[in-house]
Image 1 (cartoon, helix red, strand yellow):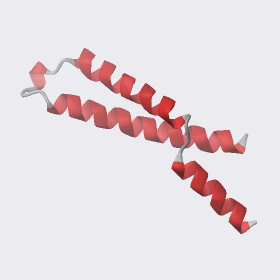
Image 2 (cartoon, rainbow, N blue to C red; image 1 turned 180 degrees about the vertical axis):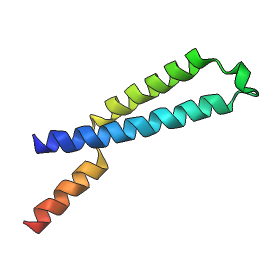
Image 3 (cartoon, rainbow, N blue to C red; image 1 turned 30 degrees about the vertical axis):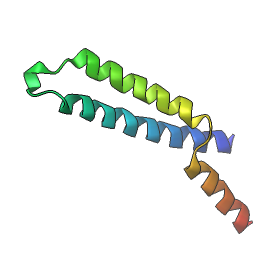
Image 4 (cartoon, rainbow, N blue to C red; image 1 turned 90 degrees about the horizontal axis):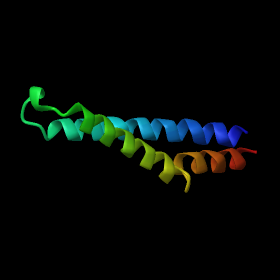
Length: 74
């Protein structure tokens, strides 16, 4: 259970960073703030967050490295 909690925390942090970066990128492509299509910004950011979570299923280096360090310390 401890491994899952570490993975979930790391995956959530990574996904939130991805969502924020994607939102900034989509907003940055707009010339004026009044021209921002918020539906596109939100949907793009959510899709990027979902892709990040799905990619994290394959493994997260930060979780794997932490576990290896714990094994060395034992």
